[in-house]
Length: 372
Image (cartoon, rainbow, N blue to C red; front, side):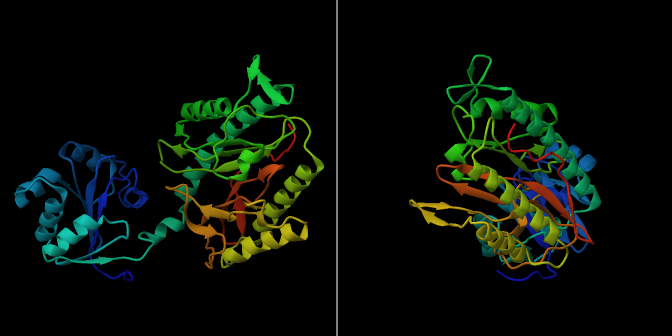
């Protein structure tokens, strides 16, 4: 891969799976289209019936019907259309992102076009959120918080029979809570996918969605990370709750995780290295007696990074982990330390942080309470 140069930039894909294309065009489309930037001018070429919508919604300077390019090429395929567009613009060299499909890249090279791959990130500006982007992310977080509060209230209202939570005469399951969360999100104009409601040892695998009846006196990790269907920005929040009485060890885990998160927030500011924030939490956990390592054939302890950037993707740079990079004003990152041990379950608390010029600001408002 090469470093970024002042070459025309070419990309192809759909903007519902390519956050870069959505950011660059502000045009949500499930159909693939061609993106070309030459100097300060942006051109997109797309399906004919999408031209009118693109003219109304996209930020592109020029919008072309794909049929026009295919007619010029004499072939009905996207690669030929790209070739025709480059010929129209008299371009012999382009730069493309690392995610650019290899087939079209090789075909363009066969046609005499010099194709250079840009090292990630393709759109560095995506990492530094504007005030408008922060507003959109915060709006999604407020809706996410409502679904979290709904889930916690439901768990709190459950009765207990032989160690299992019951609602309406039947066991309360992870699937039932997840469904209620998703219905609440849909009412708020968001889509939840992969929502986690993991009880006990299920939470030892941090991305285990959770299944089956929820247990009393056992930590339940609830992690919700929906996408707005209006702005297409994500939000992210995690809470850990216990219906009934938590063990003294779980109470200590909760206290230490909460204090570890506070430590991270106190350190986050422009110029701080992300790996320093992460290592400070690791060291604090060890000082409190919570070490990380293989136990019983399973990795246990603080087994993931402290956080990640989010925006048009749920996981995007910067990472707050072992990576040596500096945080900058405008970064929006999660702060989600956790501890996981077999026989005890998992405890994770997650809020979102905006890196400001003076430090950081928490974008999350839901209280942190273990026993409900």
